[in-house]
Length: 425
Image (cartoon, rainbow, N blue to C red; front, side, top):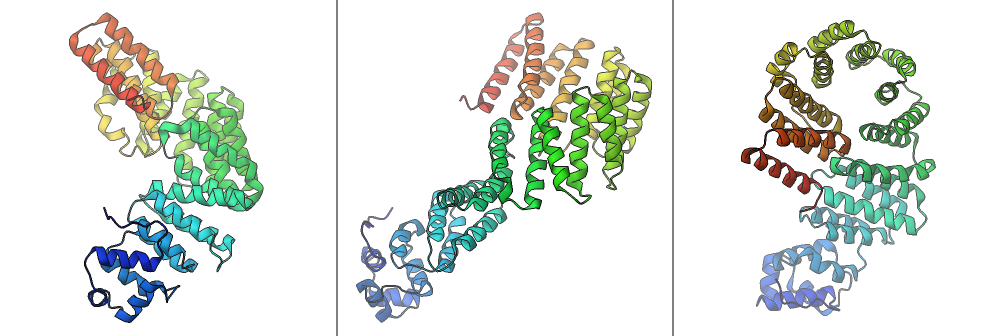
């Protein structure tokens, strides 16, 4: 780390000190930077108080002055916003969220461009960042804080929405991010129609994943009211309402919304209608019909895990283990390869919970234990404590009935991973 002191330094003093520390003459620096010795001298002496960034950039590069060290002295030159945007883009590659946030703050204070225009550009740039979540969130936080303190309500709303859309992908904090997302509902008047539809729909999905079915229904109905088109958001919102009523055992309402959903013209509609129809028949006590329909769904549907789970639950309820064995034999064909969302993770976890129950039924306790451990870990990752506890109850019962050192080791590993998921280690 450099021994150069930056306290109270002007940009010229900073350049001079770095040059002297490196034992470099102005002539040598001119040679390396392709900036004339005369210009370098004037910058160092303060004769050029506001040097053009194109002039100082090669000097800074030649002296290897870190961006975070040159920023404060550079700000004394009152740089233009387009120059600060260049610095912001450079900062992204450094993976330094606090530095990017600091440059963002400087940008918002720029005097050569309207703050609304700058805030809009910043939000757009942040949205386009990929694989830089920490920096993206730092930019959103900076814009939101500035907008809130300057009465720019539309940017509080838009920034908060974009921040929520990033944070909701952290499945270990589903409840926390849901509450922060709901806060944006106070600012819906400052969002565009498209943004309101996105907010209502995304919060509706979020509520469904947390099994907050009343809130899911309310949010998805709001999305449908806002959306005057026949969009996929509107279709999925209708399906979520149907599924929520199903889980609440309000089957007439579930059938009503299923009929509405069936009228949409999207490729995903038919398989969802067929699957939900089978589940409704199951709840009506038409078990044989439901099984036949589910078996047909299994042949035609792309996403199979929920169909398999429903079939296994039906078979186990009547102690019919033979078809369960056949399904498990075809496990590689239906286990989801992509576990990038809570719904696919939940389906995966429910499968191993059901598989564990099957293993108990056929007397394979060790195999059952392995399934319950895997299921418990996944449920804990997606904030589903009720199902995590169900798995733990099975684990404790198995360990009580079949105590061994191997089983004890497996249970210790489970709790170590669960503690890690909860941030206790």
